[in-house]
Amino acid sequence: MHQVEIRQGNRSDKCWVPAGYNLLKLLKEKGFYLDSPCGGRGFCGKCKVRIVRGDVTKNQCLPDEMGHLSFIERKGGIRLACRVEVNEDLVVELAESGQRDAAILTDGKSDVALNPTVVKRYVELPKPSLDDQDSDVDRLEKALGAPGKLYLNVMKDLPEILRDNGYKVTAVFFDGDIISVEAGDTSHVKYGVAVDIGTTTMVGFLMDLATGRQLDVYSAINPQRQYGADVITRTDFTIENENGLDVLSGLVRDEINNMLKAFCQRWGINPINIYHMTVVGNTIMMHLFAGLPVKHIAVSPFIPVIARKLELEPWRLGLNMCPSGRVTILPMVAGYVGADTVAAILASGMAEKDELALLIDIGTNGEIALGNRERIVACSTAAGPAFEGAHIRYGMGGVKGAISKVRIIEDRVEYDTIGGEPARGICGSGIVDAVAQMLKAGIVDVAGRMKSIEEAKSELPISLANRVKEMDGKPAFLIASREEGASDDIYICQKDVREVQLAKAAIASGIHILMKEMGVQHKDIQKVYLAGGFGNYIDYDHAADIGLIPAELRSKIVPVGNAAGAGAKMALLSREHMEMTERIRQRMRYIELSSCPDFQTVFVDFLSF
Image 1 (tube, rainbow, N blue to C red):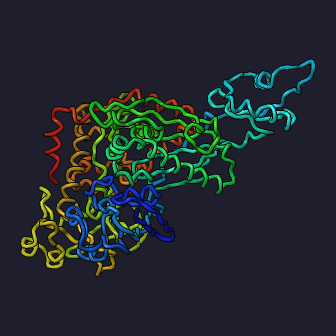
Image 2: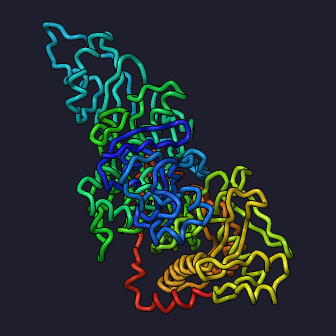
Image 3: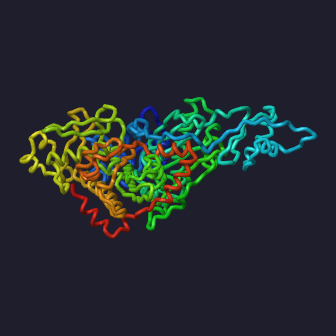
């Protein structure tokens, strides 16, 4: 057995583990957050730690670590946690996680006519007597005039609530069922929560169901990210580990409980007065949240356990709200077009208009929908991780210190970071900017090939040429340096450009195939709704310059913010909009791109810039 001391910020922990124990696995088990988009497979290079004490340092890096660590990092004891086996006592330091510093998009339109599924009615019951020996349940139902299903846990508390309050109580209904009976008149106290569970981030909205007002917002990094940046890696984790599904389900439910606790503390709310929660996310995220297996979604023909709207009781999920309330997972369409896309379509209003609209939501996955009130076709592309920074050498999420804007002006490189802090890496919007600007400056050609050092010296201004280096035998362009105040030298490498090419080609191909399926041209599309954080922050001209969005559509772009979250709020506040989500699902036709005979040809055509 060996002792490992772990330090991260103000937190430290000591534990004993058997020889050969994997350090990344230990860090996760102890609740320390460490980004590992590849799920510990050793090829993302993000799970860096510093070995403060122990001989497993410096020159003992494994071969597959060498490409991810600079000479200075190796000399400073930096290792990839997934490649460290504990064979001696260690002291390990982790950088601050930055989870709470993420720039997570929370805004989204959700103005609706208030008509929630939760209804409260105050009643005064006649007291029992020898002449009136109705049971407590019968007495309540007679007073309400409309008997509904009454749950066992509600019946247990009913006798004391009635007698302690002079038979003056408030009944709480959900779609006709009585989910709670409360002392006195609480008809004005009624709360709900809408939650958007993204692959990378989570956002929750506290809503006053009595007034329709949004009271609060909570955002966080999805804690499942430490088990992989994408849904396939997380699916593999549930298959390869006996308790993997329980681990991932537990992580997201715990974070939602943190959300509920924060709401209740900030607003002085009793958790039992939160009666309804609507939840959206991609199909795999919804299955993981519900504790449903996902292994069959990951393999052809990509079949989910359920796609229609699903209602669950909070107590079964361990959520700290009204136990007999409801958690509604909005309807999904297919294995890779989920409730978030349905909610975004609802929020955009495209399903209620005659005009033809295109919806693009680029998150960790890329979902695309094209249609109007008549019909909607949709597809999904595996484009997101590059734009979330997962497959980019110096990539990172949208947290403080991430380069979010890049400009190459004549012979100068300028950039902005989130929070104005020293550059630590580059996020999705910065990656799109950088590639577009490198293309314009001639550092990258239309085929995506970067100029070599020799070519740069003869063809580029000297200040730009000096930024072209060699990394892993390939060209790399310096975006930010330590000398300029960055925490590290930050490059865009040749491999990064290839990742962007693959991602943008996937999105562009999806748009092309949906247009072909509908038999329409660019001129027929009136609106292009860009949803999600990435769609909100990118420079539209730069996105069009690299071919991520068709150039013919750049003037039609309308940012709709967190449309998935907005749709979740709309369904929470209005039963009509809740019913509309099911109609949207029934109207949608999913196109599986991998089964399209011309997809590969179209994809290759869109690879060039």
